[in-house]
Picture (tube, rainbow, N blue to C red):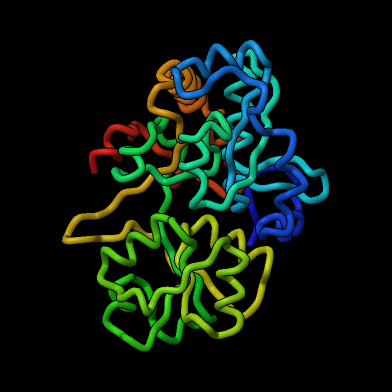
Amino acid sequence: MTRSGGSGLDRRRFLTGMGGAGLAAVAGPALLGGCSRIGTGNTMDRIRDQGYVNVGFANEAPYGYTDLETGELTGESPELARAIFAELGIDELRGVPVQFDGLIPGLVGGQFDMVSAGMAITPDRCAEVSFTNPEYLSRTAFLVPEGNPEGIDSFGVIADNPDLRLGVMNATIEQQTAEDAGIPGAQVQTAPDPVSAFELLETGRIDAVSLTVISLRWMLDVRGGPFEVTEGFFPVIDGEEQVSGGGYAIRHEDDALREAVNEKLAEFKDSGRLLEILQPFGFSTDELPGDLTAAELCEA
């Protein structure tokens, strides 16, 4: 598959970084050790004063990951954040790599100022943290063996067949959707990152991997093999389509930070700059969020 956009990104660079081995190299300098007290709503003032913002990411391409050739944090979410904060007079973005299920605890605990990982906005997460308005829409899909021999095109297919096994990343929306769709826990294998999930499929321990269609297409481009990505969809639970969008997670107290990001994000949508930044990472007009708000997703 080809990607639109002109970033010239080499997808091979992120493979090691998506697993645990690549994390330590970039973790050290980004902690908040000497900064003013977090969690008091002062984040916007503090990051303006210090000239940089710390963001948590989960090494999941193409959302947020370390480019192993340059050692730099990249992906659609960090690159969009860089552009937004540059407009706000903050020129440096520092990354703190964390496994996905540690992102919200790390944010609440003050390990970083914001989550920049393409995190889906869900009611459960909204109870713990605030979100900016979505930067993209995220349809779900399955990575399956070529030809899709089991006909897996929905979570219901797996729920109805006790012989099928599904792979998901731990603490992701796909894990929750599998549970909501009635797939027994014994049929779901969790993985800490996309590469681990891919390897479960390669070795035949599962029959499909569920992530966003963007993640799966990117991963298949990198890894190759006798697999295919099913058509993307919004899952239907109890008769309701579950529209999903990803945004930046911010502590509840940090209203000024959230409002500043939302203001610039709205400008980028109107000018077409949002699509320009997201396109090199495999996003298209189909993934643009339109007028969908975080409040609507939090109440879904």
